[in-house]
Image (cartoon, rainbow, N blue to C red; front, top):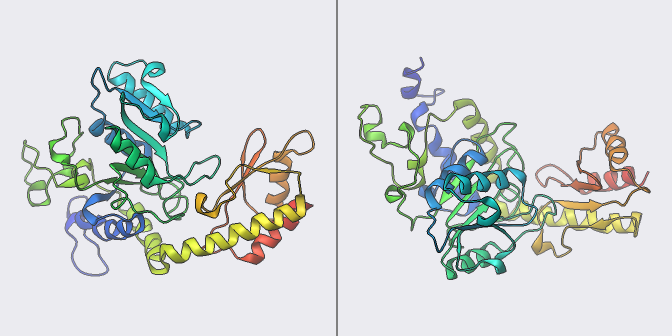
Length: 343
C-alpha cells in the first residue's frame, strides 16, 4: 500500500502522486498567483530555508539580508543561519529596517506582509518595487496574511513568499505550508536550490534515474511525498475560502475590526493603546491591544476571557492580540467579547 497508494484510481480514492494539484490551484487563487508559481509542502520555516538557499547568492559587494524589526523569531533564526552558512557574521550581514533601509549592499529582503506582533499590513507592492529598484530580491512571510488579506503576489512582482495554513486558513495544527516563486525566475537554473525526488518531473519520477529532471518552477523544490492527511485537510479548508472568496472575507473582516475598535474605545477609553494601525487598509483581522501594568494584568485578563470561552493571545509583558475570524465570528461575538473584557 505504501507504493500502490500513489496510483489509486477512482472515487473515493485519491491518487497520492497528484494529490497536491487541486490544493495548488486553490492556494494560487487565494494568494493571487499563477498555479505554476505555488506549491503546498513542508512547514513555513522549512520552505523559508529552501527559498533562501535558492535566492541568497551573496557577493562581496551585495551580501546583506534586510528583515523587519521585531520579526517573528523563526524568521530571525532562519536568516541568521543562512548568513552563517555562507560564512558571514549575522551581526554584520543582517540589517533590521523597513523598505527605506534597502541599500545597494542588500541581497535579499524578508518582510512580513502582516506583522505578527502589531498586525500592521505592509504595502507588498511598494516593498517589492523598492527592492527591485535597488537590485535586491523581495521575499515575504505571509503567515499572518494568507487567508486574512487580499494578496496579489504575481501582479505585485514578488520574488518569493512563504506561509503556513493553520492560522487564518484553518487547516489545523501542523497544516501544510505554502511557497511561491514568481514565474519570471528560472528555478531550474538556480545553483543553490536544494533537490529531492518529489521535485523530479512526474514523467520520470518513478524511473529512479540518478540524474535529476526538475519540474518547472517552484514545484521543482519539493523534496519528499506530501503527507496525504494534512494535504486533504488543507484541501477542504481551502475549498471554503475559495467558495466564499477573499473579497467577501476581507469585507467582513473590516466590518468586525471596525466594530471591535469602536466598542473598545467606548468601553475602555484611555485604559489601553492600540498598536495596530487605525487605517483599515493597513491592517488585517488582528488588533493588538497594549495594557499598562500595574493597573492591568494581561494574564488575568486572558484567564477571565478563557473562562467564558473567549480565546485571545497574550504576548508578554502587556499585549493581547484579538483576531475576529470573518468566516465564523459575528458582530454579536464582538459585543460579547468587549462586555467580558470590560468586566
